[in-house]
Image 1 (tube, rainbow, N blue to C red):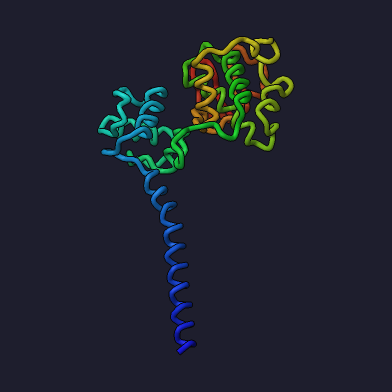
Image 2 (cartoon, helix red, strand yellow; image 1 turned 90 degrees about the vertical axis):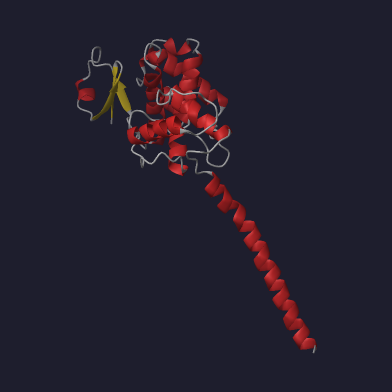
Length: 229
């Protein structure tokens, strides 16, 4: 009888443990599903998506937190331009391309300090304040791509202050006070928006004198700058 009791007790404990593990796993599954946002969705994350798309010229509707037909069309256009699956659904990959965290939907540049954001904004303003907003983000994206590349330093300051890397550093324009657009462009670039398709160089063909830079593979031209790998 005692043996039977012990066996039943062990079965009961195992069942409780199995239930506990299951209860622990389900929240992460729900989080994964919550990251998929599509037509009919509502809330703050939808507002963040709409605002990003509006800032970048994909969306012209109201930032109201309601994922309607206009938002779907804007998402599809963004996906097409960024090489993503064009389905109008904002899943993990599209959220990442938008620079919005799937977990917190905060879009925060958590891996960088405020001084990094400020430094990049200074560079963008010094190098590209006459360019369109996308052109400013593109300059920031080049810096971010260099940080990721093994051919360049792996820190913000290291890349920006590398010898002969940027004209704005050489002529002192990096010391100018950046405006709100430059700061926003820095944050967007740091959050992962890359209009350059992976470029690690850019130049103005009207003023560039190096024959070597002309030999690089062009990825896109934005405003006065040619971006290249």
